[in-house]
Picture 1 (cartoon, rainbow, N blue to C red):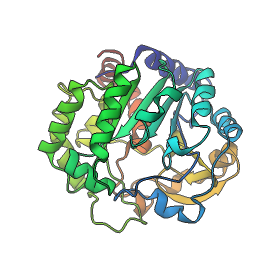
Picture 2: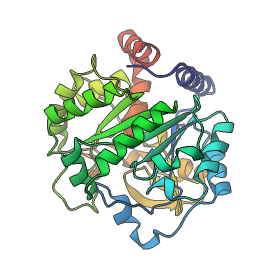
Picture 3: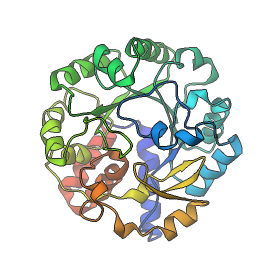
Picture 4: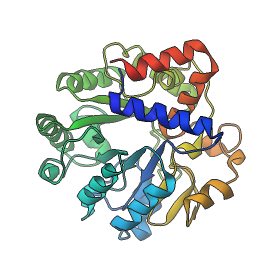
Length: 333
């Protein structure tokens, strides 16, 4: 487990800079959604349900770049929808990397293998694929047969070409620990650059009974946590402890702001109470005290990394053991 050196140094410098400036709220990751359109209809995804009336809307290249500058976050996660459906996605990635920011391009993998020629391997660039189980399980969640094999083929091709590839795995109520272990063993053997894990968020727009309660999450993630010495996790060590119920963290929703065709999403990537026209409006006009566990019932069972991964980085300052765990986990593979 560990982050690449370039990312580790950039994150450390960014955190130190904001601490010296006395900033209490600042973004670590910008969730950039240039479009909502997708070529899948996954069981646990709330996006295409929530924005089904504007699936034809997109952000232009210039709107994306302006949003990146507004937020100033060192990491930009390009998601959606399926970003590879955007006609300017290669230029969006290229221009953000030119700013020396890190780009996570999230994709379901269906279009990836045929799109690799549009991109160049770079220390600042990560391809992120979502895999939630082995073939039968993942295809069922994705709503189409063959998605898993297509994704694995794309991962192998990308790695042969020198791209960094991360996997994002969501744990649902139906997830099997043994199947997840089998998946992680397969991925580690390719090998992928890293694996990120998180529990599913219970979107109001999703009616399927596939989400875990907070108590069920910690029970489900304890055996996943025990895999940390054999799996190249790309989460911070303290976030993994939080998932396993070994550490308490408070949500920091401002750390992962979301920009999409409707504007700056308030308050976070997972909950929508409105949209602001600018990042400054989002940060200054949102009543952040209204959100988080104990404040909003929609937050009661949330343990997703977009709300808590940055909290784990903040928690490292609370004690020397936490600081050492984080340093060891981020800097040493």
